[in-house]
Each structure stands twice: as structure tokens, then as C-alpha cells.
Image (cartoon, rainbow, N blue to C red; front, side, top):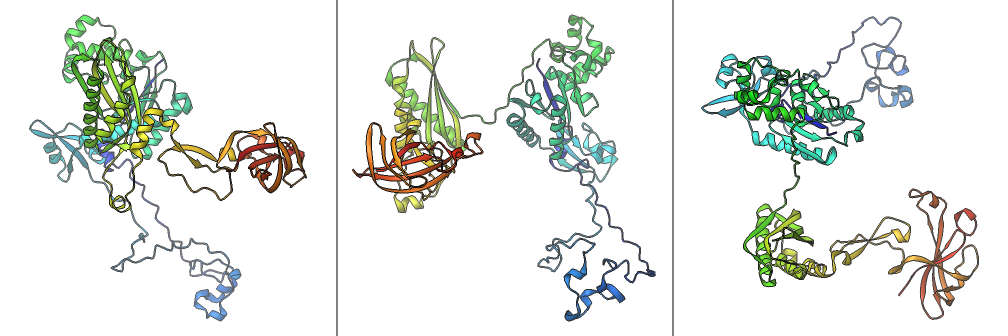
Length: 587
């Protein structure tokens, strides 16, 4: 069954500015000075002197720092200080001589005055949001600012930024999309909707997920109430009107959960709410037994639709927020086309349109998808990758023309769309090095070659932090700069898999082989170097805990040089079976 979580952020506009007292840091405890006893009795050390009683250096009321250097006691006699040492940077002085980092002993958190955000409605300003201090004075959203000023003359008023609040909601929705659920969206002006179907168990269940989500929002300084139900409408209603921080409606019990709630929980407009009060309808339970026809005439069809969405009779989809809206270029043709010249012209126009869109957003395309819609309703889809972000219209058009032969127009193409499914920021770059060094940009060449043979056929070898030779190299994109290679002497190319050797004659445990046979040919070794011992990577699998390889570089009578190894150290049987293997060749 579908499960939806609704997150209600009632104080988002205020808390986004950090002007609410709900998350004000607590006032630190004031240090209490211990009582001073001028008559310490038998103890010879003043109790207010902050030194450990009983030290020999504190006798007769003398402090260690006040004594001459030659009479000061050794550190082992000083004992342990009972108070914490002062932070070394607390005593730093600014240019004006005042302490820049020191805090007063009795500092309190700054007080937050009543503060409201105002929004323009018609010819007057009304309160859009109010912090906790303002609400304690009776100032609520919807109240005219002039009336609020009359009630509290020192009220601080600032204009509300609805667009910034919406951007904050979108950022939270994108975070939820990446960390909590694959379907999430913002529910402006003060909430989120998360489809947690099949994902809540990954966080320990719905209750645990709701608690973790609420703690996360609290760390951000946001007050939140969360509800989970079968429908978005029910979750929205419970999050705002259940009067609980976390509300979880059991599966299949949506009607029972929302029945006691007021009609405002159904997201009805003001006209429907006024009409409902005129007929004595106050709760959702009052609407459930009533016939739909008369109810629709009195409250409107929108009210019936909201009720059906809340109880699950009408589906209410959640429009998933997209973290990135790819730039798109589209051409709709007056008549279907099918000739290569016409299709090439459309590709040329789409490339220039997409380049203009990318330039407007400051982006460069890394991957493009060309979608050609045919008359019969099917699409021709071609995917193109670029080695580096680019928005040169001529280069993009050239890459599209390389795929022209793969287009099957059928009865004709009527719509062309070019989408930059992957884009990266691309700004201006300095040309000083290019002017002096006359460097050549290989990106265009790599793109053209990849357009014919594919990007997987073009790569560079880059080192990997691994002692095992077959794991120490990986393929990277052609334009990536590999890191520094190790100083170990290795063959330029290794075999795909080590191949076994036969008829090996070698002196154990550390001598290279004198003779071996490989691929049906016997090789007499005239020179050898080694061993280079490599241990297995025990953290990968248990079979490599004791594994050992001894590598040798050898040269035969014909001058051919090989890189081979023996399994085992020649002493302990657990390290290997002493078999010989060919792993590569030099030259």
C-alpha cells in the first residue's frame, strides 16, 4: 500500500532568517564563586587559592610563582591543578587593545525582540509570519501590520521573501530525493511531501524514520511536525491539525484518522469553508455520510475532489522534483521529412538552439540525447557523449552529423528534440597559457573519434593504489590526467590473465628460474633479477590472507625479457603451491 509522509514547517520564513526563539541557544550557567573561609582551621592552604591542598610548596601561604627561580619546587611536587587551563587564544588582543576572543564571565544570549514578516495583500500589508515572541503577544499571520503596530509599538517588521522560502523548500526536497526517498516534492508555502512506499524500512520503520527526519530538521533550526498516511491529502491534514509532533496513521485506517479533523484540513478555499460553517459542518466526519450531489452544490466540486483525494477514492500523484532541468532545444516541422539533407538541417538548427540555451545558463554539454519523433508515433533516440563540457554549436552539429546514417526516418520525422541530459558549469577561461604554449585541445578530436568507435574504445591507463599488479591499473577517460606512476619497473602491457609455466627449473627459495616452457616453447634464462615479493590484499577476501607472490624479471638467450612470478615464498606451504606463472613481457 502507498505511504506518504508530509512535513509541516510552520515557522519556515522566520526560522530561515534565524529570528525565532525556539532555537535560541540556552544561556550558559554562571560560574558560582566558592565561599571564602578566612579561618581554614588545621589546613594551612587557603581554600579560595585554587591550589591543591597538601602541597609542600603551598605551605605558609606562599605561591610557587612568587618564589625565586632557584627555590621553586619541581613539577612533580606541584601536583595537578584543579581548575581548567585558560585557552591560549583567549588572551589575544585586537588592534585597539581589546580582547577579541575573550568572553565575559556572565555573558547571556542576545534577546530576540518580537519580529514579523509582512506581505502585500491588495492595498494593505498583513503579517505573513511571526516569531514566538510576537505570537506570545497575540500577533498572528493574517493580521494587518497597522493593527499589530497599534498593539505593540516596538514591533520589528521586515518584508517577506516568498521566493527565498520556496528555494529553501526546494533544497530540502532535493536533499530528501538524494538521501531518503526517490519521490519527493515541495508543498509550498510550508511543507514537503515524501513518498516513503518501500523505503521507510531502510531507516528502521516509519516511526524511526519520522524521528530521524525531525531531528535532522531540528539541527537545521527548523520546527517540524510529520505525519505518515496512505494518501497525500490525509498526511497533509494530519501534519497540520493533529496537534502531535509525529502522527502515523495505520494502513487502511485513513478515514478514521482524519474524521475528527476540522474542514480546513482538506485544503478547501475560503468560500467553501464559509459555506460549510453556514450549514453547520465543522469536521470531516460531517461530510462523509452526506450525499455527494447536494454537497457539491453547496461547497463546490473542488471540495468533493479534495475529500476524495484525502480518503483515497481519487488518486493524487506527487510530482517528483527534478534536481536539474536539462536544457532542451525543440523543432516542430510543418511537414514530415525523410531525406538526409533535411534531417541534417534539423540537426544543425537544434545544435545552434541548444548552444544558445547552454550559453544562457553558463553550462556546457557532456551528454546529449537526440529524439526524433516519427509520424507513426515511434521515436528515434541517439545518445552522444562529449569528453569535455562544450557548447560550440559547430562542434555539436558535427557530432550529430556523424550519427546521421543511423537515423531511420520511416514514414517521416515531424518533431526533433535535442536534450543536454548531462551538463557542467562552463565559464570563461584564461588564454594566457594557450597563447604562449600553443597547446592543442584534443577534446574535439576525441569527440569525433568516439562518435565513430564509441567512448569506451578511447581511454588512458591510470594507476590505482594496489600492490597486486592486475589491480594497479584502470582505464580512465581519454582526457583525464593520470597521477604519477610508481617507480617499480613493470611491463608496458600485462596479460589479461596470468598463464601457467611448465618444466620450470629453479633453485628455491629466492633464485629466478633457469629454464621454463611457455606456450609450447622452451626458454633458457641467461639473466634474472628478483624476487620482488607482493603479499595478498587480505581485506578483499580471505584467500589472500597468506598469499605471496615472488616476481622476477628474466631474459632468455634470444634477448626476450619476461615478467613472471612464483606463488609462495618457497618456505611456508600456506603461502602458495610454488607454481610458476607468466604475467607480462617487456619490449
